[in-house]
Amino acid sequence: MTPPGPRGAAVGRGIGIGLMYGLWRPRVLGAWRVPASGPVILAVNHSHNIDGPMLMGTAPRPVHFLIKKEAFAGPLDPFLRGIGQLKVDRAIADRAAVTDALGVLSGGGVLGIFPEGTRGEGDFASLRAGLAYFALRAGAPIVPVAVLGSTGRGGRLIRALPPLRSRVDVVFGGPFDAGDGSGRRTRKALDEATARIQQRLTAHLESARRLTGR
Image (spheres, rainbow, N blue to C red):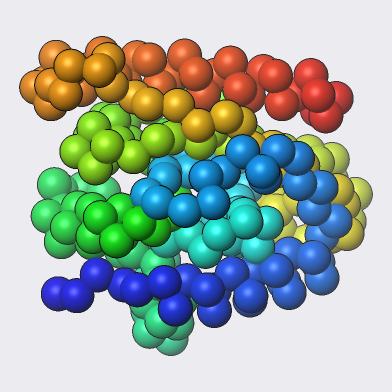
């Protein structure tokens, strides 16, 4: 299967810009930290259903997100594929999704990952090894991203969404390498890289909360 090209993701970015700025009030901080070219992984905390679309609409480059297969239902399947998003089965070692994600990176694109695997507290408390695998395998830097939305109930139509027209802060951190410079991709190297990544992502989230007062 041919990996999704940048054209669909660019269309998705345009849609994300229109929707996110139309329904909420994004405040983007540090977008200049995202490398202007070459492969990069955006590691995003996940506490709202809009986190993926919000990043698609606020990142300075088009993003291909790994999205759970359950979201590709009915008419959303061709739509999500058409805007360059990647379907992943979280219950198995999804080789097709891995191939597609590595294809994005080898083509110099931007891969978006929720390293916690699913929506939760959004605090990076529990990371899966997939992020470290992609970073080490592709040699791509990781940019931590904190999406911080209102937790109040006023104006909220759906519990998993911030209230409409509320401010949502998107804070990009500095890029970093997950590896230790040895080039190792063993299980131990993956575990060590995951620990380093978690430390960096947690530190960025804490910094973003101090910066935004969230």
